[in-house]
Image: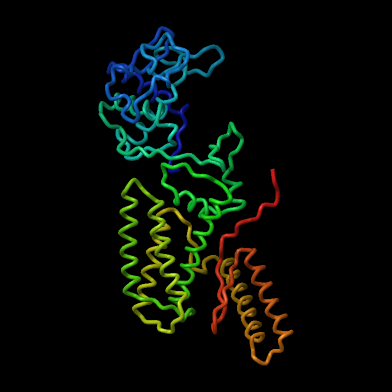
Length: 392
């Protein structure tokens, strides 16, 4: 995050925030020294979601004028954390902390405020009410974004209390950040997402489709790949139509699911063209493929993907590239000898098996080798999904 804040550093700001709400007549001080927001005197309360009586505490609080009134300042009991205040030693209520700190850092109006669906009521509703009262406005937040939950297989919500959470470090032991990002983008943000082998497998597969597409485009643009029946008019129209559709879906409640569907359809269509046999490589088709590749790269980058940079850069990266280039070139030479018409079959089989073994070994370390007809072999780095080595 750009900035992090601590409640304990903002106690004076929170007290000042509560004092102003009291001055405006939207709160009251109880005999204990606790301060409550007066919901009945605030007509717009419930704008995010009308509260239900069933959501009121089972045990009534005799200090409250209404069961829906919520705490701005809670007077401390013996042994509880406390700070001095004009009303009684105590601590801030849960909701007031966020409003006071957000107003201090971001000002009187927020553009986007997000959180899980379970925070709509009471947390975000109470934040909205007390902030509108403080800033004397009818709208504190322009856009509320409430996300679905991440669940494990069987629609069971991940929760520390259930001890079924997966930490970021645990996830990255098997998958990459791009894999998880793809999982999230394939579902509308309001929906809950199931984290399982099956759903992650789909995300990994889509990531590989996109990575393979970008690599095939690079091979085509560099002239290494000389085949591909690319219809430049069709590709240009596909890119333009996809660009328009992606923007439309993202403007429609940030529907990343449908936006990614459009990108993947474009990837599949052009992959089919690049895989079709043809020896016609024109400048027009090169421009069209470059346009498609750049569009996909830019779209994924804007959605947070970390795409591999061009080979080169740091010294150790250059050295690794040189080693891989030499290894793949040697393997290509061996394959060329093995496939020579005069090579005896037993020996040919041995050499090709050795080539396949090397290719599989490299794949397990994140290097994919591709063989091309009548062309040298090429390589690319891939994200490796680690197999499970232990069970709980």
